[in-house]
Length: 251
Image (tube, rainbow, N blue to C red; front, side):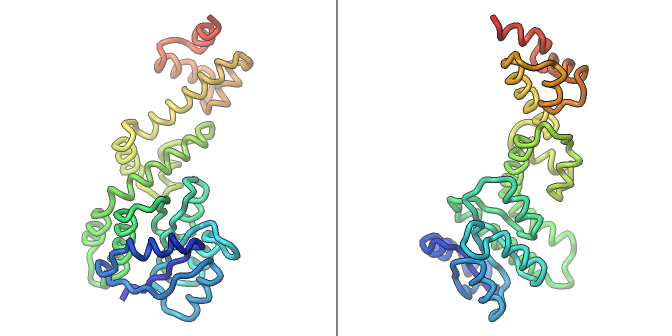
């Protein structure tokens, strides 16, 4: 049996999760449902738990603190369910060891896919091949890739003025850069590199419209490496130089 603990301070959501799960599809058994991380740890010390489904914002020990403890001291799968579409939370959860980050309102399809994937990977025997494991993961890859693509987009939107590259983002998200670029383009129509440039151009237009900054300042604030490169890329994407664009805004 795949023994499950649900950690959520809202009793209605807890009951909803229990009802959503297709328990027979992953040989699941509900061990307990608790209000916070402290109660979860008490339960884990007394019971064998294979999977924790947890919220982030809870009293006493929150979800991120719980994930850190589980990662350090236990061999337990973790799925995070949160109302916070926030890159910082997602990053902390992923680095801490959670295997999926699902946003509220919860999709029953997404939740069951995540649990079934965790169950199947955990229960592979010692004789399985790498190919069979990859096929198990690929079965649910479209769902995960959509979530990951949106997290990467959120990260770029927040950090476009930093030294971003496909390589640095793929390392941050522990994802192969070629796969990352392919799935991102499938979701948004642009490669990661193209989206970074578009986001920077958009910010540059906003700064140019203020008419209060020099080209050098705009270059730095919009994330370009130098003014010459910025002017060339801006013209390639808009058909005019930054100076002419600023002039048009004045008219």
